[in-house]
Figure (cartoon, rainbow, N blue to C red):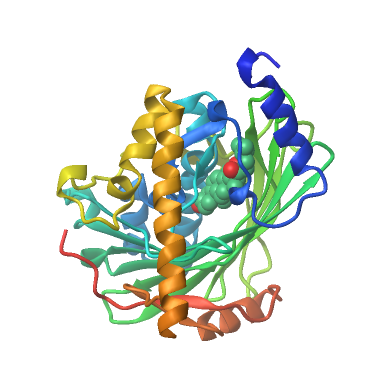
Length: 374
Ligand code: 0T9
């Protein structure tokens, strides 16, 4: 394909061949330089809050229904960033840097009147094999906390990479009355297409759910070209409550706009600019912070100096291997810094039960409330 530099065609073809019949941890496969991204997966949870106003507005909903709709609006509005922003910034989907165990990413969105207060982000890589990323996002002034973790199960089918997202997020809303609402957010399935031509892009598939403790549930169905509206990135969400006879239907494309079918009003609109997370300059970061840790690799990738990038990457990986050997020798294990791993999440269980969510239980990473002051 045209997107593949002539000198890398052979290695791209062998990469695609190694994908066929592959199941497991894709991040560990060696890919040709042109497809490498200088950004680590620990940065991805920032996509949850690049429209901090929409996040803050969840707390302003006066009724349970209004809040459930605000949660859905914020969620849908994150999808463009989560799944198309590499295409916009780098020309196609790219292979992110594979985080090391203990890697950290901190950031915030500054305080503004429209969002009540500042929004903070704490991310930690809590597992390397398989890669698992835990995150905590909070807007304290608004009483909003999003806590979640992410892993992927990948397979290859019909020329595409199929990614099942493992993990979930819980959004907790503390109301001015002191009451508490929780929302369980499950994640869509991904298909990575365009591989043959060396210009991968993501399409979403199947259904994801947002189940509120107040009974409101959104089922979001994703379709690509040729369904609902005939265009890619289409979705149809139904918002319902067990005691209501009618349901609300929202339909549109998640990377542009959607309409509330019951009122005809625009439901979400992400054609306006988003706001990237604010991060401490790399020179002031600690050695476990993502941009500092990967500085040399990222610089090499950005400048086309792949020899330096590869050398720096080997140095980081060897250091990690040595650390694991030392731990094995001393009979110790790596201690997480900001999260505690629990094997069964009672909040997940309670909320998944309300919509027959599958599986019945999941593990989770509980935030230890010890992030840096930002
Ligand atoms: C959570 C998101 C996730 C992470 C990425 C599949 C993928 C790693 C996981 C699911 C975020 O909230 C949303 C967006 C993009 C997802 C990535 C896209 C991708 O390609 C990678 C995988 C591991 C690869 O790097 C595949 C090889 C590559 C050559 C294809 C571009």
